[in-house]
Amino acid sequence: MSYMGVDVGTTGCKAVIFDERGKQIASAYREYPVLSPQEGFAELDSRHVGDCCLESIAEATAVCPGDPVCAIGVSSQGEAFTAIGADGAVMGNGMVSSDARASRIAVEWSEEFGRERLYQITGHTAHPMFSVFKLLWVRDNQPDVWSGAAKFLCYEDFLHHRLGVEPAISWPLAGRTMLFDIRRHIWSQEILESIGLEEEHLSRVLPSGEIVGKVAAPAAFALGLADDVIVVTGGHDQPCGALGAGVMQSGRSMYATGTVECLCPMFAEPVLSDSLMGSNLCTYDYTVRGKYTTVAFNLTGGNLLKWFRDEWGRGEVDEARRTGSDPYALVLDQMPEEPTRLMALPYFTPSGTPYFDPDVSGAILGLRLTTTRGEVLKALLEGLSFEMRLNLDIMARSGIAIDQLLAIGGGAKNRKWLQLKSDVMNKPITTVAVTEAACFGAAMLACAAHQREDVTAIASGWVREVDCIEPNPARAAYYDERFEKYVELYPKLKRIEV
Image 1 (cartoon, rainbow, N blue to C red):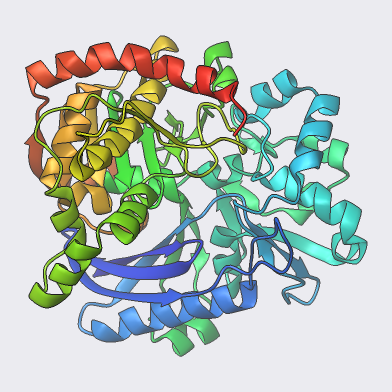
Image 2 (tube, rainbow, N blue to C red):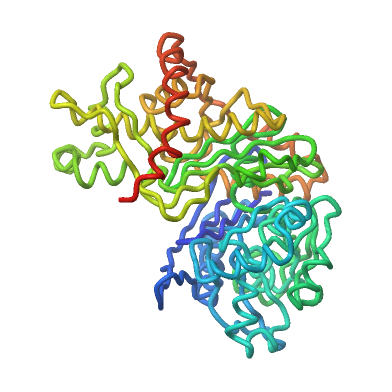
C-alpha cells in the first residue's frame, strides 16, 4: 500500500507517493501561471489548476502500479477560493494571497466589525490576503457571481470536488479564510451574517486527518486509481509542511526557506494575546488535532539570494554553467566566516510579520570602501535571520517558546547558510531528509486515517533527522548584541521617506 500527498501551490501542484515506511516512490509536478489582468490582481485559472492536479495524480499513480495508492491527503495554499455554480462548473478565477484588490475593504470592514472582535473569533488580523475580504470584493463587484454561486471552495475542497467527493475543508485551511471560529471549530455565524453569506455556501469543516469520502468511480478510472481510494483532509500548506518536517511537539518549529522565509511551530492551546495581535501573528489549528500553530514570515525570504545571484553573482552563474555545479552554493561560498559589521533591513518586498507593511524599503547600513561583495551578501542573510529572530522573541513573550528549529526548503541544503541562521538565532537547527514537506505531511495524514493511527506515531516513523547545527558561542554572543540594534532599525528608517 502507498499514500499520496497533493500540494496545490500558488504557481504549481505536486503529487508525491510514499510507501508505508515514508519512502518516496513517485512524484509528478505541473506548473501554472499567476494571472494579473489589472494592477493589484493576482489570479489562478481554477479550471486549469484542477486539470493540472488531476494530471499530476495520474502521472504519479502510473509510475507505481505494483504499490497502489489507498489514500490521498491534500495540502493547499491558503486564502484563495473559487466560486462554483449550481451545475458544479467554475464561475471565475481564484484570487491568490498576493491579490491586493481588497485592501480598502480589509481596513474599512474590519474597523466596522471590530478588529479585536474579529481577532478573538478568527485568530487573525485583517489583511487583504484573507478570503473574507476577497469575498466582500466579489459581493460588491461581481454580483452575478455572488448570487449565482452554490459554493465557494478553497483549493483543498475544490480538489475534493474534482475527485467527485462531497467537499470538506480542514480546520487549518478554514482558519485562513477568517470566516472560522478557531475555538468552537465552526463557521462563525456572526461573521457570515455580517457579510451576507450562508453557511451552505461553504464546505463542511473537519479536523486534519479525517476521511472525507472515496474518489468517485469515474474519476478513479480516469486517474488509474483503485475504486476504494479514500480522500483525507490535509490542511494549509505551512502546517502540513511543519508536520512533514517533524514538528510533533511543543517547542519545535519548522523553519522553511524558499521564496518566503517562514516559521511554523506547534503549541497546545490557542494564544490570542495583545502582543501577537499587535505583531500580526495569527493563531489557528495545526495539522495535529487539538493543537495550534502560528505562521511568522518574511516575504522577501530566499528572493534575496536570487536577487544577489542575478545582479552580483554572474561570475558564479557562468562557472556553474561550465562545471555543472550549484550557482547558489558558489555564491554563498563568497561569504566570510565571521559576522559582518553591516546591518541590513531585509524588506525588498512588503514586510510580512510582524509589521504587515506594504510600503517599506530594504536598506544596508555601514558600507565602507573596504566592504566586500561577500560581506554584503552575508549582511543581507543576517538581516533575514534577525527578522525571524524578532518573530521568535514576540512568540516567546506570549508563551510560545521554541528551542528547536527544523529546516526545510532550498535554504536547508547549504550548511554555511544554516550555520549563519543558527548563530544569529542562537538556536540549534536540525535538517530532515524530506524534500517535499507539504506533500509528506499530507501523505502522513492520509496514512494515519487509513491505518487508524495517531498521525504523530506515523510522523515519528517517517521523519528522518539528518544533521544538527549548533550555534557558535562566540558568534552567537556577538549577534545577541547586534540584535538589540536591529530591533530599532525598522522604526527609525520608516520615518525617512525614500
